[in-house]
Length: 494
Image (tube, rainbow, N blue to C red):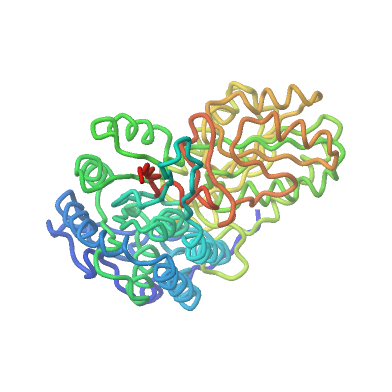
């Protein structure tokens, strides 16, 4: 495994900016005075200490958002859109310092951090325009002296909670459409990755967003979520995270029939057919699997390869994986960085051990690196496995790990059935040049997102979300703004 050997000193690398909560237009400490340490996964070193709020901070933010709601909802879509465009512009101007903060707190490479931030800015830009296309309709009447029509109005104050792996993009997918629709927002970043999101809120503040329209509260997920769930000011919650937490939010939402949008777990299959080049297919597979070290909800995690090309595919996947340069994401030339936290390293080891116990073989990687430059961080070698059973944990559970397991198949229907044999339904991938195979697989796979001959399908103008236990609703595209709107029907006698 190739490695990048040197990590620059951390002391002065964190970009300048305000790393606090943002409530009612003011940067603030937590009410309780609690703080949370932010650790760099590449070095296991402390890089920042930030406020760690609680229910009281969340209640204050909700009150501010509720107070700001009438004026923001009354603003025109054009006025709201102008502010969203300014936010996107500031994000692009501040791309490099924001990317450095994101790499230091999450571990991904600078190139991947830039890509995340570019995608986040695109969300604000897209919804700046999509807000202008929130239409009502005139309904034909059945009685001569009646007029019937509908209008669309914002759902109200929104609580947004996002995971640690794409902290800025995941929040942007929620904040941008909510603001465009006329909603105000209280956002909770992941406790482990708040820094780049705080810089995002700096862009929103400097763009001139009115006080209370967007608020940022840190703190334990359970405390913040409890206040969002129980406080009637909050009318809707948008959450990205695990299926287990999503199910708990569904249960809690019943008390107030609170509206939910949920983007939950995934376990994406990739079906590789024998009409494609095994070498090109392996390149796409390795690229998709080890992006952000496999810590991507739509990352392909089960690779079903036709038996006619599986040997060539495996050999090329091993060669490409061994060539990946593992190291500090801040260092130029790094291909893959560390995992996010020690628990992810332990989880990766457990998945490999379980697969081995069931007959699986590691043909590349499989260990923590031993190079001195990497021993302090949360690094793990990108891994390729073969002979993995369908009953192995990595075959059944969301992995979020840098492991590429390869399974043979002969018949298309068998591959589709095995790919669907999971409670998840977020994303799936197909590699084929045959139109009939493409149609059969895309129609037969029970997944909300399907990439054909590509592994980065997400984009601002298209819907993002899953089937089965992978979520409720869609983010992105025109569907994304609908999640923050209510339809009001008016019947008038004249």
